[in-house]
Image: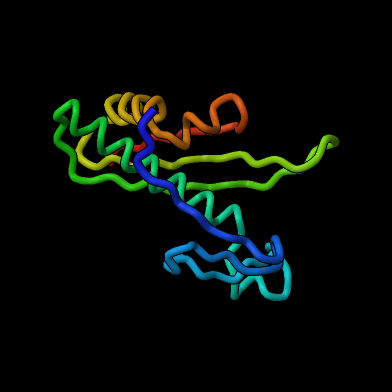
Length: 137
């Protein structure tokens, strides 16, 4: 294994606090959804949704490039849901993936291929329910 990059961030105060990255690029208030400060702060689910969407988009573009498929662009929207059952809290994910300039069958194939190479997909596989929705545009 060859490490390529390490990101570091610190959370102070948990879900009612602040998160900062060591380089200062991320410096955000954190708040529970529905709390009195929720409209002024982010939450861990939003941060995870943004990270997963960006990572999956890069994996998708890698697959498209390797296969030399012509598209008119891609976008990925991540939805991360905080759930609770009798055993506690857990998250689930839905990724809505739009690929412009391909047909539906190709979009579905590319999304599945990206899911196999995306580091976030690999990390969540077997631990988090991830639903993929491919859309040709």
